[in-house]
Length: 78
Image (cartoon, rainbow, N blue to C red; front, side, top):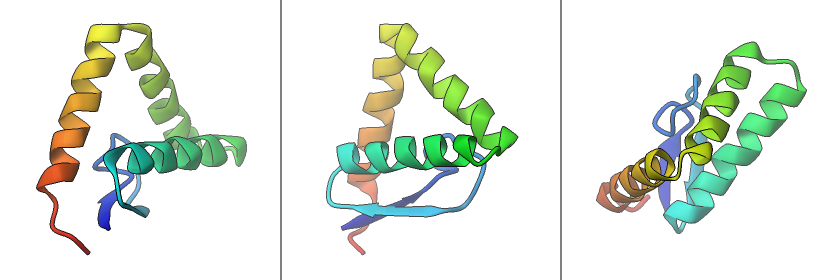
């Protein structure tokens, strides 16, 4: 298991996500952003909008995805 923060994944806070794979971490971050936005958090709304915008541009989105997977792979096991 490895741990990344919301901030490491492009978000505004230090909430930690722990998962076995980078894809699970990314899904946890996506869930966290959706929940924070639903609760009215404007800082997370900006991060959620930025994440959606990345995926509208496939090259930019894949760049972020690849960088996130690499960062996850370099983390120590927790």
